[in-house]
Length: 111
Length: 114
Image (cartoon, rainbow over all chains, first blue to last red; front, side):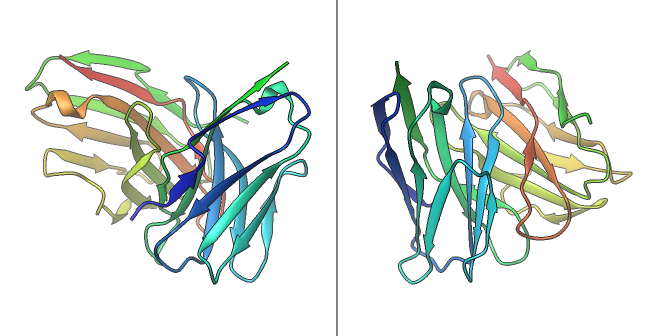
């Protein structure tokens, strides 16, 4: 089952903050976050692993609540370049790195 | 270094035709993935290669879809008897073998079946 993302869309002014949520109906051992700009390939942002380990970029933070099977991506002091669609991905199964992605959250940052 | 490349970037075909989509992963990446993305949706997993073998093809929608990676590098996704519902952007990604590694996506092939 694919994870569920909320909200579906967000409009921000430059400098404002946003939170994007991702929840799953099954137990997770990792959550992956990607950003995709229109007409481009998805670009890696962050991986959150069970046990609290994070691998990702310095300017974006995220949380992973294993018990609640949820993850949240925190975008602070947003910049115009943050605009795009954010996807969370969760493992298809425990045997590899294949991901099932949520429906995406469209973020638009305006000047 | 070079990223993941995919060819062609666009492919228009007629219903019932056969198409091949090519993916060149990042050198040294043993894991390769194919995804399909419809407009307004997240990528949908199709098949995963570990080296030359298809480690997981559970995402392939039916037996019209097939993929190979004969030498453990370049991969080809093959679609027989194309249908209008196959129209989508087909994305390829590669990563190092270990779990929890970021996937590097290619620019995709936009397939349109008329």
